[in-house]
Structures are given as structure tokens and as C-alpha cells.
Image (tube, rainbow, N blue to C red; front, side):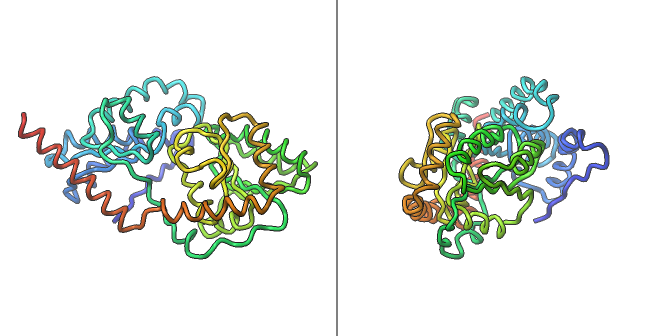
Length: 335
């Protein structure tokens, strides 16, 4: 397998534009070189380029589009305000790509619903995205820390609810002054986290901009629970990572989160993104380590059940490609 990263030498603000405008040519070159039977696109936006390649490449590779979350958030909750201006157009283009794909794949029931709403049919396949779980499952979970500590992991983007994190932590710090918060991630909203870390007052905040998988596992081991504040989630990779380390998750019931977190069994689920509700749930677990540990044991069991092995993931992907090829052959015969 070969990866060909796009290195854009110009202004960072144009990096996304450069990536999307050069992607069709790069994909066409790769498809021609490998005589690809199928192209798998990681989102409907890359799917547009894949469809263009499938139309002009002599051997007509089939197109499979994956849906890992609500693609509409990409134009509204990531990047610059200029992306929001283009969002109505990109929404329509994404829908056209999904309708034109030879096959689609969702990662959860929530993303499968999005696919069906747009295409009028269920996705060809639905299974979680692959993650290298060995780092998180290799060892038994560590004992819970003596000090109550929340962990938050994610890109510092609006879609991850950084504003909600700040509001929740203000309430938690006031209720449990000895509690600590570790934030892992970087992005355009880093100033909000830096402000929390330098504010002083009840509750200490540690910011870790970038960590590798082993270091993330260590941060989870040092925590009591993972706090999630996202506005939207396709499934929630970080939830599975926390589960694998035997840590319960506190989260609002958005997107695919409700498919992983069961309130009172492997975490605490809020039916709204009200900071007071999330703070109350966090305080409950931080002040009751035995209850948090019981949820963590179930979480570990769920991670072992939910996380696919590399072989299982490869078999599912092969079946998806074969389904795309078979569908295309049936369409060719009928025409």
C-alpha cells in the first residue's frame, strides 16, 4: 500500500482547496497505475473526485463512498467562516455523490439513516471504522487514580463542543475542587483550552496538544472517566478507546454515541447538551470511584466485543467491494 500525501507549499488557508482540486488527478493516476477495480472514498466529498475518475478512466473503477459522520458538519463546524458560505452547495454535491456511488458504507445506525435519507436505500454495508485497538486492549485496565480526573480527547473544533467543555468544567471544578481535567487535542479553538489551563481557581487543567496512541492510553489510564461534549458524532472512536482502557464515558446522546454508551451500564448518557446535566453526571462519577469502576468493567467487556479484528475488518471490506462490483455488473446486463 502506498500513501501519497499532498504537500501544499502555499498559505494554509488554501490547503483544503488545493487538496480537493488536485485530488481527481491524483486519484486517476493511482487508479490507472494499479488498474484499480474500485475506489473507496472516505467521505462524500472525496467521493465526488472518485466518481469523476470512474467516468474518465478507461477501465471504469467502481466507487464506494463511506459515511463516518454527518458530512454537513464539515462545512459548518470546521475551518474558516468561508466554508459555511459554501455549505449549501457542498451539501448538494455530497448528496449527488452518494446517489451516484456503486456502493455505500455506514459506520453506525445513525450514519446509515443519513445514507438512506439521501439515496432512498440503505447502505450496502454498515460496520465500524477500523482502529488499531491492540494498544488499548493489550493490557488489563489500570487501577483508577486516587485523585478524581476527567479526560477530554478530540480536535479543538466547534463540532467537538469546546464551548460546552468549558462550561461543564467550570461547574465540575466548583463542585469538586480537587478534581483535575486533562485535555488532549489541538485546533483553532486552542485559546479556549489555554484559558481554562491558566485561569486558576478550583480544578486543575492540563493541556496535551498531541499524543501518540500509547500516550493516549496512558492518559485514559490516569483518568476516572472520559467526557465527550460533541455536537455530532458518527460513532465515536475515542469512546471505544476509553472503553478498552476500562473507563466509563459521560456524553450527550448525539449521533452514534447512543449506540455505544448505555446509561448506567458503561457510562452516563445525557439526553441534552445542557452543561448542568453533564456536570452533574461527571460529579457523580468523580465522587463515587466504586461506581465508576463498575461501569468501567462493563465498558472493557463492550470494547472487546465491539472492536473488529484486522482480519474481520478486511473480510468485511472485501465483501463490500465484491458487492459494488456485482451491482455494477447487474446494472450493465440490465441496460
